[in-house]
Image (cartoon, rainbow, N blue to C red; front, side, top):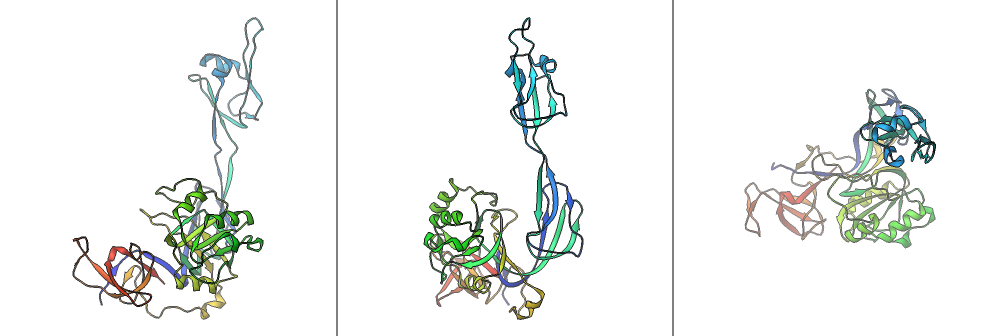
Length: 377
């Protein structure tokens, strides 16, 4: 059978996930091999060094750099508070004395006789890593973190912003093309993973922040709305660190795009369940997808439908589901109808390997293989 390989976007009612949860610096692992953990449970903890504040004592007292040491009333390693006097000049014949107060709280880390500066290190900041999913610890990485495994329903998105969020899945609309606007959001949505259908508006996001929505899942978003939400144009980089008060995951792309029926129906079947959401996205080296995860309990796995046909990861075969990722059919879903072995002449006059896709609705189109994305099960 003809076969090709292409990047995949996973939408699955049941898959086995192995999630590696690692601290940014060495610290303490809080769980052991074989432990069952829940999504919001801390599994590792560390202390990050506080920020450094340069303190310009020489300039503040009008001294030469070499004179600073004699004016200090604190020493390296001392703890100081914001506003505390840390240096005094002697003045002339007892007149014109000056005092210098620390601009920040912290610990004196260094004193330079070359620049006349002190370095004040702020208090260490605790950082914890959560399990993110309900599951079992299958590996412990000493002083770093753990790997957690679970069976789960998984929906990967095209684009997201904001970090990790948790809550119960709640629907704000009744069909996959319905625009998610502010009127659909009320106080009952507080803490929820709110699922729309088509495009989510900037007004809806603003209302969701007011109400306390944990995350929004929608089919599309307008570029102008995204700029309004963030307050700036988003460059090409990894997302996930945005501080906007909630997480947003877009499943289809930019513009007025309906959520894929398959994705909408899977999320609908999970309504009321607790989900873990991460908006972090990276589309270049080391692709990272935003995702919605709902862990499956052992007792319910038998009732979850699975594919009888096993395919290789990334394998593009006859009958596989794909999404078109270039105009004029951007965002449309279909299935692979044929994989011609010979390159074809495109409208631009160039040659490329192509795939024939039967779109939802019965229309067939021929597109370059690079213009499709596999929807993995």
